[in-house]
Image (cartoon, rainbow, N blue to C red; front, top):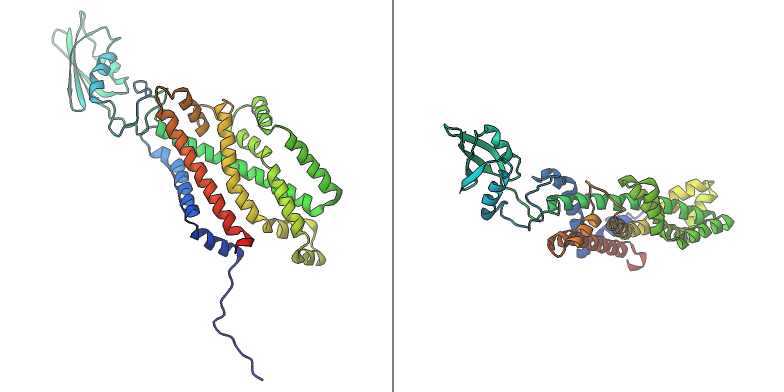
Length: 371
């Protein structure tokens, strides 16, 4: 009797390989993933590449409208030139604008000091001022270059570039969202897996503790932490993550109770594996599908909570900013400068939609009932 060799046997796909293949077929989820990656790259690498820092203040450009043309506009140069010499105790007789250069003729009853150029250089609009004093010292011509400043999304109420502040705010909001989610998942997964695996009275006591925490207003708890321990970035994601783990603990506990009766767990237990080894090597890895799905849904929830706290003035403080801070500032200036509310709100809407679509795609890809 001869052995029969079966050729061309195909290797089976793993759970994660199948999930990735299914996720790639979901166009909305893939597009959302691309949007999230683009926003993350822009938030991390964008601010250093911009011509304006997120904390740079331009006093002459407070609440200017978004424009693709450089500031100052042609009709703003002459008034700005006259305003720079208002405290110089000289009389401005003529202002000539030639392209991006301005010439200012001044007279005075006393001798003109060439250091008069400092008044012009202090402005955000002009640079490289030169002074040519007449022979009698009573008149002079000041020549300066007009600086071209681009504010694609306008400026805020303090004269700061809104695009730079939105990119920094995206960085802060996404950082808080991811770190707070990691804190919440770490606590929730360990707590829920331990309660579900051990069971008995310990499980009952641990879950009753979760029920007690559910009864507390978690936003009030976060506000108390911020008030007592101060307002800083580290406290924000620790405080938010410390109150967002309750749902994850219940979800992982339910998954653990189901996995506890599976054959591979009982086999490992029969071979002498300790409870800690069973939780670490068998229980937690088999709950990662649910954890990943919940993580993509928890990140937007944390971002909204942080934005709410920042809107109340309890979140990120100056000179840093978050989307909640920018939206609060935009709401205060929406009548005179509606773009201050539109651009941060649009950034938050795009980010939250992308995270939710990605979460839905991961849920469909990892759903064992839909294979």
